[in-house]
Image 1 (spheres, rainbow, N blue to C red):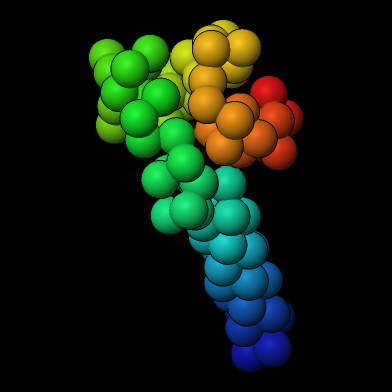
Image 2: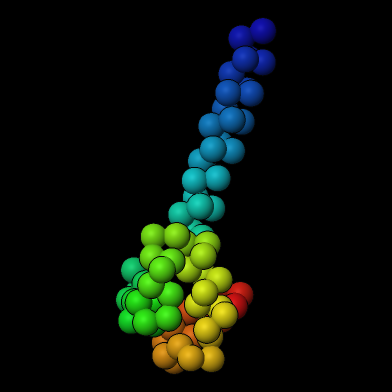
Length: 78
């Protein structure tokens, strides 16, 4: 009986750790942030601090972005 209690707990811990890792990987790296900082302020300032809206705004303005930021947006599916 003791094993059945610990196995689900271990599975929960592993799934939480995997979720945290996936969330960390989904955010922009410092290099990506630097590549898009100017463009984000220029075209999407109202979305600063709102990652989903910022991503959508940068994608919507992709043709206006600097080369570096455009590459970041494209590498993230935009």
